[in-house]
Image (tube, rainbow, N blue to C red):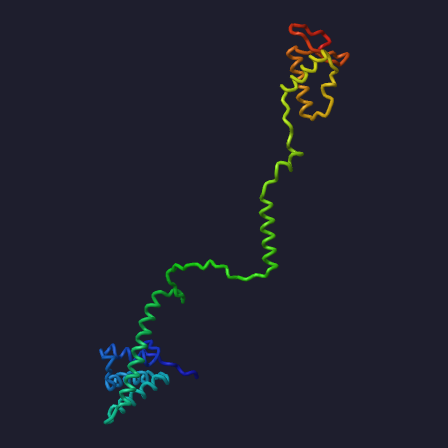
Length: 240
């Protein structure tokens, strides 16, 4: 059958029990009366035995230690007893500090975790990672490539796609009138010959329509010619 380890009033060990007895009986921890402390300690041990509980060996070891110190103090020269008493006092003081620290930590603990307020830390921005030269070259090439891709294309790239020469209808009106003033009449198709762009041809066509509408020129459907009209002249039925 497994033996039960007895803990009186939740004392974790004999040192904790001694501290409890010192505080309870208001003893001076720096000059403990061993005889009085031993009497209180043995009383607790007897109480444990009366409860038919197994007393752990560390409690019995402390009882033997106190009895030895008390016996040594009865000798004429009890330097050893004083040394043992000071050693015990040191252990009691040290354990008392542990108890106080444990109480402070217990307030800060939550579900077994200890938390502290955030603290300002000066970041170290020094890049200390080392890379292979091949990796650095590849990274540089990728960055340069992405940078170049963000540069907008030059106007010349789109000149053959979206760039068109702007031709005004007014310029073509002047062109038709000058040609007719020189020739008086000209073939309709001659106004559209040459290396004209679509914009120029459209502007020429609109210029011819505008001049016919304002009766500055006349179109002969049979001969497909255009002639210049004098101011105030009437357009014939074959003119459009």
